[in-house]
Amino acid sequence: QVQLVESGGGLVQAGGSLRLSCAASGSRFSINAMAWYRQAPGKQRELVAVIASEGSTNYADSVKGRFTISRDNAKNAVYLQMSSLKPEDTAVYYCAATVSAGNSAYRTWGQGTQVTVSS
Image (cartoon, rainbow, N blue to C red; front, top):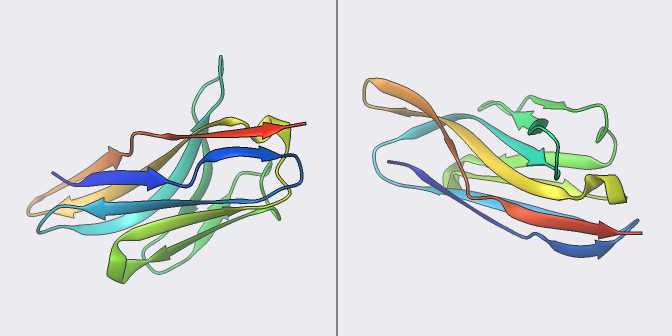
């Protein structure tokens, strides 16, 4: 089973920056799309950004121009560079990956990392 481990969350002032990282570990797998989601208290989990295996990206309108998703296929890692952070970006951020292993394909999630933006 592939596991995702996130890091890089924390407390930052509005206007600041943070970089989230997520690395996949396991054996005999390949990763297709990778994505970042977030869930604020009392709200549903929402897609923040997604990156395909060949590098094409899509972003939620709320983060376009401020966040950048990237990946390192050699390291099975995905990153989220967040700039010009706003208090409304406060949430638990989750990494997700679509994994192919043998004859199966499935989505797996990280444990989440808290991002808090103070005003």
